[in-house]
Length: 101
Image 1 (tube, rainbow, N blue to C red):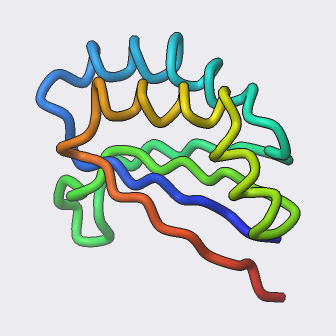
Image 2: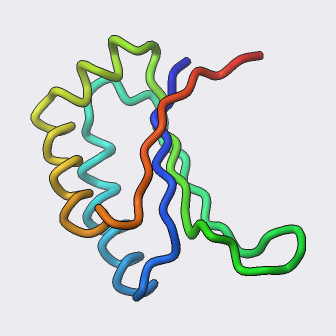
């Protein structure tokens, strides 16, 4: 299983970010062909009790790299990427990983 991970740093306006992320971006992203599951984690603090550098993480799971690439090239994938850049281009990092047992 391959996953595309989006790590978001702390947004300036958390309410505005959450409104757009959960009500606009997530529904667009869930339509990407080949997406098996999507998990969102909101961070609170570090083990030391400090505010985390990161605000949110989204893990998007695909069967394999080809399925992920095909999904990203689809109209839905392009719509998700365009939307992402419209509200989070300065605070998001995207990384690809493969789950190992």
